[in-house]
Length: 512
Image 1 (cartoon, helix red, strand yellow):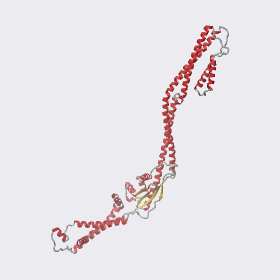
Image 2 (tube, helix red, strand yellow):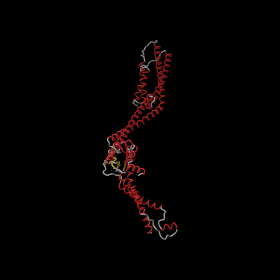
Image 3 (cartoon, helix red, strand yellow):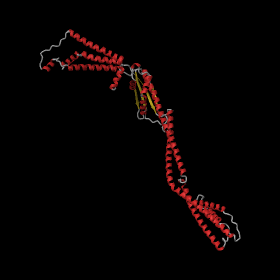
Image 4 (cartoon, one colour):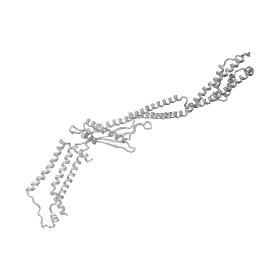
């Protein structure tokens, strides 16, 4: 066991130049990279989403956005191509010698920008904006530009939504108002077209129909009575040669006697019924008609001569015939009116259904209009809240300051990592070389390979010249690596592509 350990130590010592070559080369590259990488400074700012200053129970804003969703919207609107290019050009984030394309600038700006939100139940919503740049002042200026755009984007977003809501309800109120006016016009046109067959006048028309039927029956009875009276007068005249003996106690004509009877009947009805009673209204109309007839009757001149009997008969018959003609004409008018009333009563149910549909549509539009007006008022209040910044808003708790120390790269970590990787790869190189070497170097190897036991072994003896040439070659190779790698890195950095961009692309490609 001790002999094997001594053998491996001797092997490592024989190849120690390879170990140092690999380890020092990688370490030198790491140290050179850590020294050549430019410093990056990170500035940040802390912002708070403040709750509305006016309680929702008193006046609510019309802009209802979840804080996390609001931050995502602002972040996406902020990190647009146009904004990033404007900010990069305004604050000279990249030098002219970088020779970056616009797409590369946008990609690098997005990679250097960080938005971090912190929120929770019953906790305030905070978010941090960070930016990493080569210059400390540039990083602070960019973060400050981000903050200004975040605040302006938030105000613009909220006021734009409030104004859109207000415009929507303004249009709704105007549209519903026009619909309401059109529906009112339809109802008015329908009522004008069916003014005699509307449901609100149905009770009156039914009462009028009853009154007309009673009036027609009454007139028919009067016509029949007048016809019988005419026949009696003719019979009396033929039998007696006169028209009858006048009663001294009553010299009035039949119309006057009928008028008096109707007036008495009207007075009796008024003592029992009100003025709106159908019977009272019918009696009043009959009294008015008889008063008009009585006023139109000719004066009757009394005469005692026998020749005047025929004239008196003719006058009375003429008067009866005239009354019958008037009653028959009135019957025709009443029948026509009764027929029109019957037709209007028959069409009233259909008109009622159509009118109910129109009024129902009107009520629905009125309800929508009232709701739209109420919401328009709420939208106006919400718009006013947003214009006065009394709703939910973003406050800057911590302004960005110019950082004193760089945030990256971590030079000790890069150098230490290079040293560790160099030692690891150097040892791995020695191990692999020894693993691939199948030559016989110990008696035990001879025994394992040939199955014989040697009596003695003689080590390989190099001449002084061979040893010198071998050492010179190793030294030259070592110096080539140690000097050549920094020279190559210098050439790449200044003549091909800056090492910081190479490093960034390497990090992005790896996925860190």
